[in-house]
Amino acid sequence: MATDFRYGPPARRGHFLPPVLRAPFEGRTWREFGYLVLSLPLATAAFAFAVTMTSLGAGLLVTFLGIPLFALSLSALRGYGALERARARALLGVDVAGPEPVPDAAGARRNGVVAWMAGILKSGASWRHLLYAFLHFPWAVLGFCVTVALWATGWSLLLYPLWQWVFPMWGGVDGLQLYGDGTHNFYLDTPFEIAVTSAVGLVFTITTPWVMRALTGVDRLLVTGLLGPSRLASRVVELESDRGVVVDTAAADLRRIERDLHDGAQARLVALAMDLGLAKEKLAEDPQAAARMVDEAHGEVKVALQELRDLARGIHPAVLTDRGLDAALSAVASRCTVPVTVEVDLDRRPAAAIEGIAYFTVSELLQNVSKHAHATRASVDVWRSHDRLMLQVIDNGRGGADTTAGSGLAGLAERLGAVDGVLAVDSPAGGPTTVTAELPWRG
Image (tube, rainbow, N blue to C red; front, side):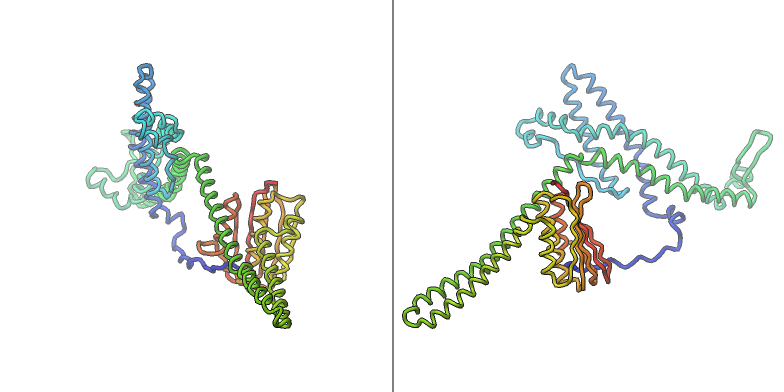
């Protein structure tokens, strides 16, 4: 259905061990263990620095020295945040973008230290870094203690049969002492006790990786929520990107219209003018030849008018403005090369811009059905779900449609994303293909 057909990578070979038994040996487990161990010294240093500088800055506010101290400490904590993001990216696989830049950074270069301090103190990201230094320290202490205790206990007990000989040879006792009060002593020294000890260690060893994943899950939330960009800043960046997509799309549409006019109707009208000029010259000398030329020009006028109608329909069809999506999509479906059923269930019309995008989306999808799907039938369903306009196009073609870069569906997904829309494609090899589009209603 799309202009690009791609298939996923071959399935990976199955593992011999279930995930529970593989977890202690996976690289992810050891990376998370390293993250939790490193968190304690780093979080301790950051916490001590934050408490010291905050207390000192608050105490010196009356002397006006507190403000520079606050600015310096917040700037240093932003650098610590960059280190934490890099550590989370390397060990936890969490790629968190940096926060929004300091306000008035350009003005700071022009106006000096005062503007720089004002920008640091006005930045919400700076204060979130300070909050992270306070909150991460107790969690790092908990994570370190729990992880090291469970991990060391699990592996030492699991491997107890390999190092149990140390006690009788070097300690003068039969094995690991489980209980002793001076009168009675209990050592883990019989084969059964050694086996039970190793089994208990196995339980600890296969359980600890999942405990570490739960602990690092909280770390992921802290890094993402406090050290990344704010939701408002992310939304601004998203809107700026969407605006760029809209501008590029509009420019592409204008170029297409200009090309169609230049190569189509304009060229025909120029040829028509030349033919009429020749007919005018021959009118007195050879009226029959002039009549034939006028008749040919009349045919060219009809073709030019049809091209102009098609071009106008591609920009914004009159039937969409006058009668809405139901009639407009039915007209599009009638031009498809396969039979198409159209079902539109709307109690009222959405915003004109959304209606136009919906029309364009269905038109593109049906055009792909005609060109690429090798289908024998298709269907179009349009309905409203709360504050969203839903579109679904289904065909029974060969499938394989993909939204990866370079395909027609990729550009369509970008156009929908520019208005907070979503495009979902379900197209297994062999079909059928189901493309669902979701747009804001904005009626």
